[in-house]
Image (cartoon, rainbow, N blue to C red):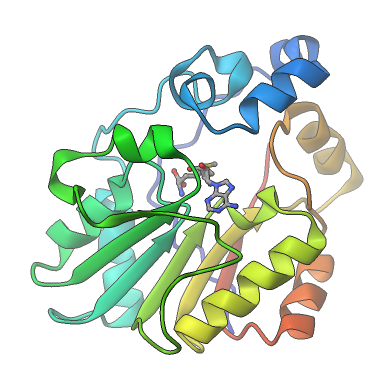
Amino acid sequence: MAEVDLLRALPRTSRNIPQRGEAKTADVIAAAREFGELYFDGSRDYGYGGYRYDGRWRPVAADIVAHFGLKPGMRVLDVGCAKGFLVKDLMTACPGLDVFGLDISEYALMHCEPEVVGRLHLGSGDRLPFPDASFDCVISINTIHNFDRDGAARALREIERLSPGRAFVQVDSYLTPAQKDLFESWVLTARFHDYPQGWLSLFAETGYTGDHYWTIVE
Ligand SMILES: C[S@@+](CC[C@H](N)C(=O)[O-])C[C@H]1O[C@@H](n2cnc3c(N)ncnc32)[C@H](O)[C@@H]1O
């Protein structure tokens, strides 16, 4: 298990935290948690404010391929794949790599990139409908924190089951009380978040032995 910043090549997200804080109501949070059109392609108050492919995941895909030594014929699963941007870019970064995704959002899957049609499964990260050890690598970026703690534990166990020791999860965290306050003003969908130590305890509790990194709002 290693802490590794596999998203280091991703451009920094711009966030208007005071505006989000003002717009955030129980109704907005409930709508965002449906992971439908409003969350992906509605206004920034509800989520992404437009989730469109622009190639920004290409260098991340190259880093993932290098980190895990992925080769043609190996199988990779992206849990929380949304519209399949990373699935597509992994396929380009390593031609012949067999890449799949899974997401709870029918909207995202119905608006996926054309190159990944048929590769994306509708389902929940805490119940992955695949046999034990059936992937060479499982990735899950900014998804597991959308469960409560028990659900996140189930998802981590599922990832470990599919690809023991060869996985990467990135989750919401903070290093200081000030970062925690900032995060809490910004967060819409995450139900479980913690300092790294809290996440590391959960990893140990669930037997998750893959790699990890933190998304920190600054
Ligand atoms: C912040 S987005 C991250 C999307 C993508 N991994 C990325 O980094 O751009 C969170 C994703 O998790 C998905 N999601 C939320 N709950 C989920 C669940 N229980 N099972 C699978 N996917 C889920 C959402 O639909 C959404 O696509």
